[in-house]
Amino acid sequence: MQTASSFARISEFAIWVGAASTVVVVACATVAYAFGDGLLTLKYVLFVVGFALFGLGGLAIQPKAKRRDRKRVSFDTEQEWEIEARLAQLPPLRGMTIPFEKRVSRNVKMFATSLVVLAVSLSLEVVAGVSV
View 1 (cartoon, rainbow, N blue to C red):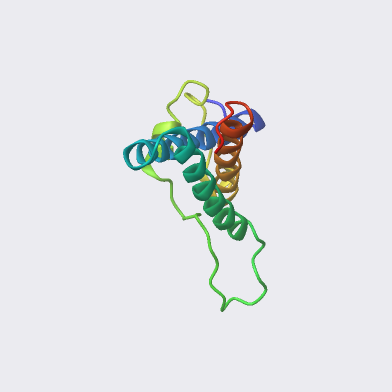
View 2 (cartoon, rainbow, N blue to C red; view 1 turned 90 degrees about the vertical axis):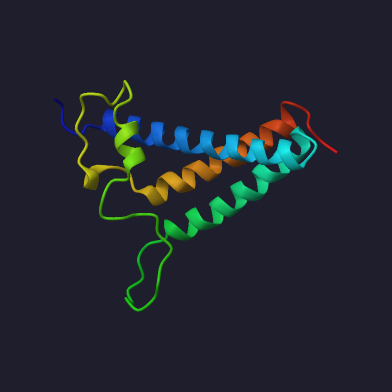
């Protein structure tokens, strides 16, 4: 088994962000088609959810304050989530060992996920021509 390399860290980051973005887009699409009129509603829902994730991710990636009495938004925990263990079994990461503390922060991953969701919303408007 290999240890944590830059390739492994980048691969784990890309797979995590891709999986999270896919889940968000599929969930938003389900809501948009169930309660709205299709792609236009999807574009708006993706924008709102992406903007909310952007705000939370932006707050989470802020450096720690010198004062310890302030609570901070953070998605980081001390242990691996079960879904992260499953994602580690996908082909690019299979056989590689990435210690939990060497991985890219979940806060950064969440911020990147928000950018992908906002990019999908933008591409619906610019590329697919979904507009009012």
